[in-house]
Image (tube, rainbow, N blue to C red):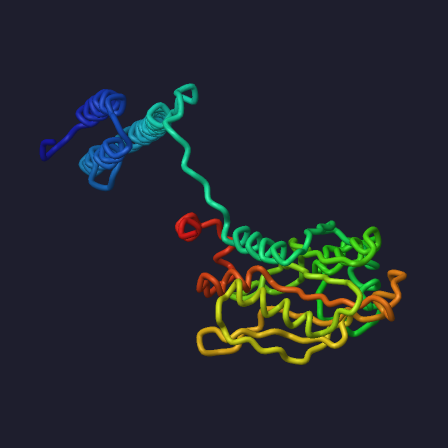
Length: 335
């Protein structure tokens, strides 16, 4: 640009800029090159700004003519750049799709071998151990009614023991079962004693999620009803099971309370230098037997319940229950 310019010279500069810019924009091959071109044309130090800077040398009457033409050109170039950018993005996406397309008709070269989830492994091992002691397996619905989940287990309405289990209610007397104990009642309604069954399954409570609590977890319930059963049979069964599962860990029984057993106890094992509760148990309360039409003077029995997650965590040294539910293959592959 010369030291002095005329209106005609600036018009020529703008015409030339328009022609060259249209060609360069059409040739841009990617977003980066298009952005560099935009800065070169429309940036603060770009070619259009240079032309506009020269308007100060024109007479005041000529400046609006150049300014108007420059603004029209600026809008025109911005539109061309935007259109080219959309085309480049569409092309990049099409190239990516073409590159990553999978031919689903190609024969498989093999499927990775699946593994049993550690919770399933643990639950099946627990059930297998009790089956080895002569127990059968019973199952029941996860959506229960109030009668089976509470009343038939000696937990009538307004009983304070209901506060021990924060329940998911579904309305119309339905709820998500808070334990697998209702399976005992359903089984005994159709199977007279003698009875020896385990009831594995998923249960639900309104617990806040943390390292040791989950609103969804798994239990295994143990039930034995026969003539002449007493607490020594309960203790012997529990000790045999715990030794088979954990090995020679110290075990202790502590007096406790459960509405459907009397007397009741909690069972601890010594693990990593501390006592860890692993199950609750007790003799079936005579009121439960009477509710089922069984004579408590003839029949007696015991029940025990354990959390599968707790057994799994102790067995494998897992420090956080949430690891069992994240579906992280890096964690699950260990098992």
